Image 1: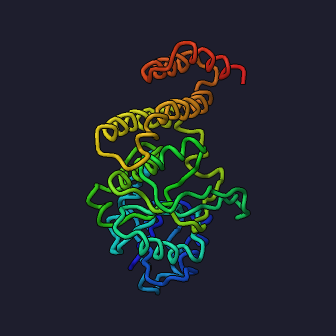
Image 2 (image 1 turned 45 degrees about the horizontal axis):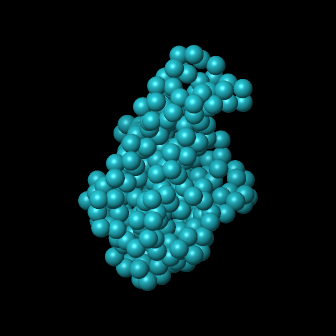
Length: 312
């Protein structure tokens, strides 16, 4: 069983740590694919000490995909993969030493799934532990995964997931939304739709929260809101489609309660992003109002949100 670990990269600050975390794996059958998104920084110099290992390959894009189209670089990485399973991690994240070993064990226990997931430790800019991702059942359906994510405010990241490479390529790669806003969720749901998802009980990944990530940036706030709208619409259609199909046991119960969770989840997201986007601008407030009406939020709900946004 061979794993492809991909690092779509633009910044060198933590890149060496990310690469070293692959070399520290207790399971050795892996390849590392690093794709430089036409960075102004000398990323090859960071990777150079590792390129003598035949398992490591370094590529540089001729044109920059950029933050808005970052999923394009994820899929460029995927195109180079030759492993049975693929993990896409950020250039500031790390795999814990037994990550691949635990994935191998999980895949042997639950063979044939399109997607697997490992628990995540949240670290800060200095690599210090700040939070722990919750434990999940060893197997859950797509609906159960979504319900647990919303009901328990679960966090997840693109580097949490391990995909069957052949499945992901045939599916057209990672689902693209601007700024990858919701791309990880939708890609995982599509992969889990028919067979469900397997989860490790152990921690295998470290996600680094820092001010340099796309998710921490306040730029392109309108794009984030539009991507969130696209995710809302996609999920509405996805849930409707599943409701018409044969479901796993308990999924009918989850579907009965998941729509209110959907609206609550997205209203919280819209409130946060729109509040930052408006910044006292009447024209932006009008745009946000129209958006929320399109998404069927009531006038009273929007009015309460407007008051909160201007006086927060």
